Image 1: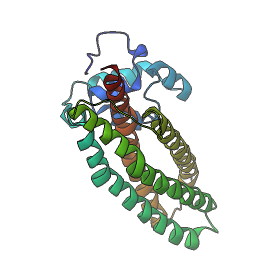
Image 2: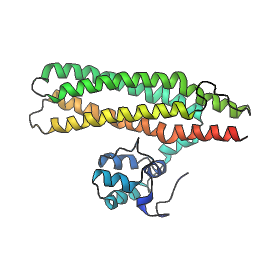
Image 3: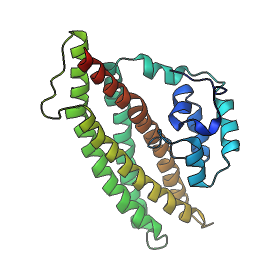
Length: 248
């Protein structure tokens, strides 16, 4: 499961290699503005090239991070899929919804008060409002459909039965839809972060906007980590389990 960073040249590592080896690599990617949650299957070299970043510098930071304790990420691998989906519903998705509702409320208030002087606020508000609708619909579909399918696969393994997923045919299909949703949400966040950079060029930003920006940045960190858990841990494990069950 876990890799030793000296086993092959850094440029050939996938982002998820680092993510799965030590959660502290997340902070490294965040510091360099690297989207790690939806680019787990890309190599470090490709991502650094796309972002105009010195790969050797990033790799050095990642190898240093890799020396730290990896217990935080290890627990997600140790949990079975049922416990992982329970955790996502009860903890991650609850926090995501609460954070998104709070930002939406503050955005509406801040945009109404300062929107005429800071034009970016209006677009941030409209983009986030659309993203919130998509996130709520996405979470609903995950909890009502995908997570039930995943738990069904867990039960099939427990009772030594072959899975019969009539509607979706394979767990890969709803997973593909969820991954597509993740990419769309991430694109919206990238747009919002770009607008925030424009806002931050102004030296006279009111404290209310500064507070809002910090809230969005904190939400982004939590959201990216949530996407990482699903894209790079939950989904691959579910697909692997289905393949295993169909072989028997």
